Image 1 (tube, rainbow, N blue to C red):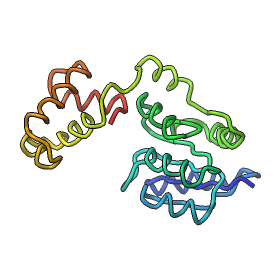
Image 2: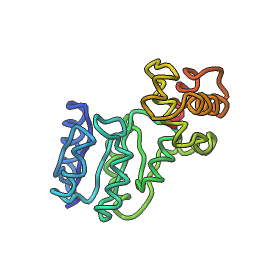
Image 3: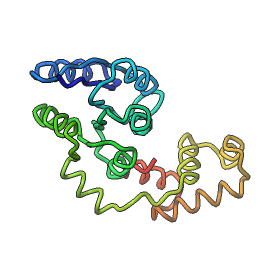
Image 4: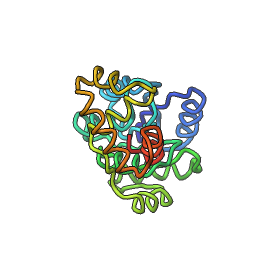
Length: 201
């Protein structure tokens, strides 16, 4: 029996996925969590064979949890299941050790098949997303540029961002300028939008 952990913040979606997977003869959902902060504890308790993680979760992202699962529970295969098929997310998922990356609007038979394949050591990636990721290329933003750009999301001033990240205003301006240049946009809001669209943040 394949033991599955589900991490999905939308109750209806989580319930539907659990119901559908439990209908499979060889699968049992042994843990369900609604936030990223709960994943590790639930995984260590239930010791699932496969963890099905959403990316956008309260607390911490499924991508961060995937990296920790790889370290602390290497026997557990991680599949990322997301609404947002962004190329940058796919790259980050693979870098975090995930065995697969699927978008939520696929048929459930594909999901069950993907779980079996991931457990067998295969990589399972949505084909359209794989093609998009190859054409988009790697994330051009450094960790610091991503942090500064994310901090600008709420409309904070350069001085506010500098204070929050313990940087000088000049350094913040340099990071924002670099991010704008690398995303080929005109201002920080456009840069933020482009980075989000590509899954770089």
